[in-house]
Length: 346
Image 1 (cartoon, rainbow, N blue to C red):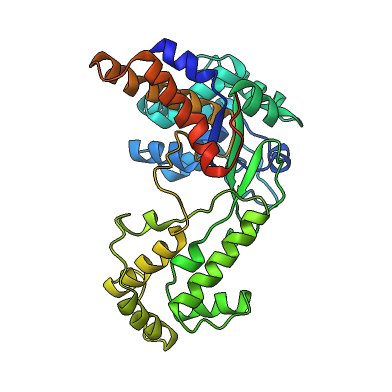
Image 2 (cartoon, rainbow, N blue to C red; image 1 turned 90 degrees about the horizontal axis):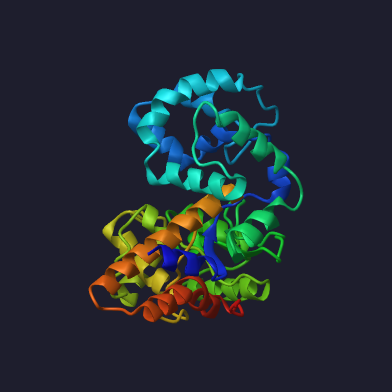
């Protein structure tokens, strides 16, 4: 398995999903090792282990959140924060999210563990990385990531922001078109896109036009967030019934997105959104993180997991080593390259 991990490490990876903040934003933040635990995933581990919310805020400070206050508070000394963190660290340090942080710090800064002797030096190394060019050093040079598809932010995530095209490609969100919750939501779309939607087809046509504009702006994919409110088993669309529900929506009689009628309409809209997308397009890696060294750690673990799965199939005689290498290269590079229209990197 270790040979597969090493082989996959030499494959330039296309990162299909990231929430990494802009390097300009990162340079404005004073992060240390404990700030990283403000991310929702390790924070959820700490809360699940029983850490009081007040202690979590004390330990992590306000620099590791996605939104930083205009006037950040001065954090308590690192020693005091570590003392309050340590009992909970012993309970969560083997979770996947904690291992992701450790793998990132190992790959970026050379530290094998987080304890009382390393929390300060790791924090110093993180601060030393607070300089222009650190993103390229970690993502391209250390992680061997060819390009990362970064999620657009803003009110609706529909504006394609200016990103460093040497490292990133933009990914806007189609949620407003496919997750309509009320007549007010529809009115907001009509106002923003200067269109009077008289039918479901009108909505789908505008959705396709919006996608074409995003593609012209360099966005290789879109994001849908249906999984946050429903199972991803979209049924066979029923356009005639959806048309009835849409009329209810226009008349202010819509029962809501999270109802059987809402699901009927959503099924049709999502099928409309993906109707132009080819099938059998599978990508092997995407992070959900804010910081580049955490992304490095996540990718290390992804390579290990893929290698573990393929090694198991090799032991069963289902794959040869060359088969596994070919599959890994496809997952991390050629499949997403074909999907996103990016030239595979050798």
